[in-house]
Length: 68
Image (cartoon, rainbow, N blue to C red; front, side, top):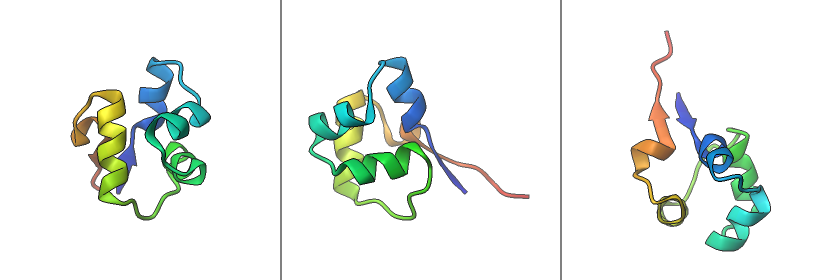
């Protein structure tokens, strides 16, 4: 399973979904799906925009968790 840490990153910076959507140019529904960890796919360009916004690496944004 892939965990998305977008909600944590947003919380640390006190950002709302609308803030992230506006600053990255991503669709609000894309940001919402990542925030709620319901996204099933994401474009590489979206990952790049989020990493640029939060000044983080991909591993800060996503984590692979082994299911037992």
